[in-house]
Length: 218
Image (cartoon, rainbow, N blue to C red; front, top):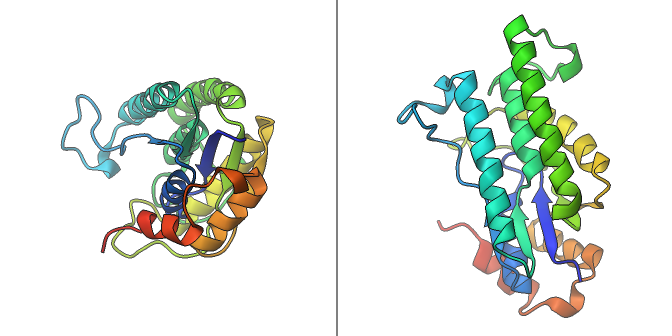
């Protein structure tokens, strides 16, 4: 049975709903990082006003949180996101910002000397994260962007999401961990996940019950 599962995808793609539903369905505990909102030394500062140093600080903090959360569940877990996400977010935010005006590929974007140096540091941290992912997870379940961001939930824009996937997918594949793509509404995604991971005999409730429990409160 696959017991160390990371549900991955760009911001607002449905990771949280699917990971929560999969956790309910299988009884595996769900792990996740805390929201990246309060850098030490920058309390109360808007996400759009973080310094580059604070961005890297929060990236390292989220990585540590994920390591601790996963290590606390030796019997297996469903992770909302993965350690690879921390690298993707930091690199993209550093080079393109939260609201990139285009989907110009990362390799074609201009960097200042300072940004180039900081990006190199972030990439070295990313190597550590990807190395960890090779043994931390048995499978990635990838949810592509299939609907727009909610109007009241836009710490990033659509271009950021597209660029995020352009970094995330090659990084996931490079780990050697199987990547399974699922599509559709939450019930369809959950059903496909169960089939991909061979979890048919590991469920403790129905798909519809699990999705209902995972649905965000209105």
